[in-house]
Length: 404
Image 1 (cartoon, rainbow, N blue to C red):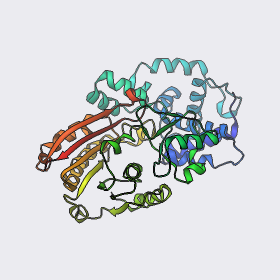
Image 2 (tube, rainbow, N blue to C red):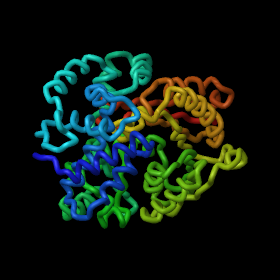
Image 3 (cartoon, rainbow, N blue to C red):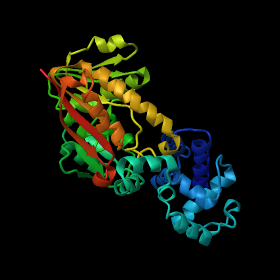
Image 4 (cartoon, one colour):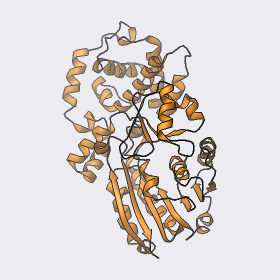
């Protein structure tokens, strides 16, 4: 187990782009992995995992290394040295790592781990917010779970095959998967692999989608032949799932504010063989008004803080600001009130977020049900999914029905 100079240099360059130039970690990692064609899978794995680890534990490592933002290259090397010592790597005799104080690093780690915000490497405001909304016991467990790397979960595209056939196809490629209890289309990778490079992915046999995210489409109870509207479709993971549950029968309208996201969805739909989808950009209130009381099912996958998916997006811990959460709650209320009008009498609505905060979830639903339009709905049930309980992403979804 030794450190290789070219892999570590790439890691340092990548951390500089993320911490000092504001780039997104996933984009930086994707670029880093293309840097050297000679790298094997273990080299690429080292680069990706090390970048994500140091991003995830940025605050803790910076405190141990006694460095402050903005981080110059020496600071980044000091943070890397902390990572290497805590991971048990022998420190090589490179100029940048000279004088690494191994005992001091371990001592400071033990000392700083007594403070939850430092131990879990999150901003103080986030710790205070989680504590206020979830209470000490739940928040402590939840933020610890959000610091575990995310598993890779596949969703079988049932328009093109079964879970069993997909599992066999992947087995032929030496990619081992396991079934997930109570998840009809999910497969979990036993070991991380770049599934996007496989022919199975290019043929549209599956999508990568978290296990809890896969529950949303089924919760909405979509059926073939219905008119269904996904009001915040984005790049369309849930849209594609609904298309497969509808067996390409009926009308599925995917809406978003951003044309670029819908273009991405079009490409994915083509690969998936999903052809009952219509695309509409929400460029005015008219787009929504035209659909008032027209849909059997409506999904509002609302914009949110993303505090349920930190394990997947560790850099959002550092990009998120408290004022963003205040603003997003207002947006959630507006979206719920406006888009719920699309549901026809007797139709159903699901409000979902990838947040674990009650103020973005059940409190929004309670508030909505007291509004003029909300009083036309009956609350059926909701599900609060915590990473600490499920091992997957934190999610919330509420099912409501419009009175006849």
